[in-house]
Length: 415
Image (tube, rainbow, N blue to C red; front, side, top):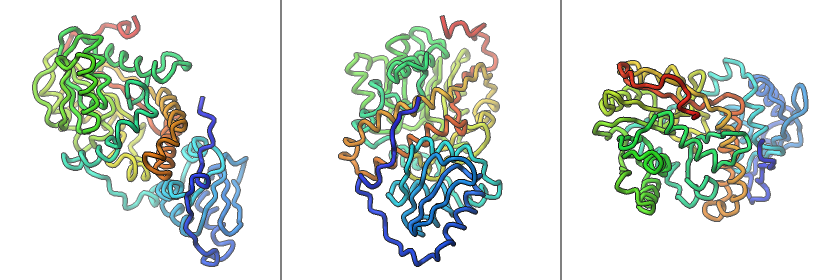
């Protein structure tokens, strides 16, 4: 169930829409341009109230929401760059939403734009590269916003990846604990084995593997804030001798390990680096080694939403299963198991959104109202993207091709 929240607060939060004289666009022209744009976008069930008093309604059915457009410049930006135009207009308060933001974005995602429109709207986009320097910049922009910020709306273990809900009624906290155990079971961990984790977040999985499965872990991450938090947790729990948190890029991984795991990092690697990641895994895994990669993905190749890529996840790219094969095929890794947790991520994002809304006043005090609107839009868009199957969540288990020490059935996951 989605949180029952009206998610537009542009007026009450003090956003000031820039003035734009209505005489700049003769009456009727803006409405005609908007109708043509909506038709190219697949006629989503949305109505518009324009700055000059004109209203544009859907060609069929009731609207799920109404967008109030402040001026001609905002409308032009929306038509020429829909993803950027809507996101930036909403965050700046020049686009107000009368209705629930998740439902609005769901309706947009479910529309079927004309193929030519997709090409036109995405022209000229240049992805941010995930080089050693670029990755540090991209990760810092999102993950080093402060641990206190994330603590406001994540679960107590600070897990910022898709949860695993044993039942739809499970809480976010219980579902994140279940996800950690689900990953550990898939890796078939044994006491005193060695594990390397690439992209460890705030350390929840590494600590769980050491605490409940008796393994030794080296965990790599380039987020200064997250590594500091993870080290504090390890010391507090007396696990610092079993878990080493390394503030470094995954490309610096060395040594040999029984298992490799990466949860929520591949989205930040970039397909141009997949072969390099495969080489790192190949040189790191023992002959009996196995691994798991947990990542947001897609059914077909596509760029990340332009606004999210620019303002939330610079350098982000969710791969298809076919694109992920560049990690496995050249190094003779056998794919043992693929699970898609898409609906689990829809519920995870909805739970994050509900918690974020409860904490929005404190978030505003730490940052500002534009930041609140930006993260509301990001979490709402994430919920909608998994609801509509625009995004997937893949867990891929693999092992060396000649490794016969693999589970005979899936019973070990559920016993």
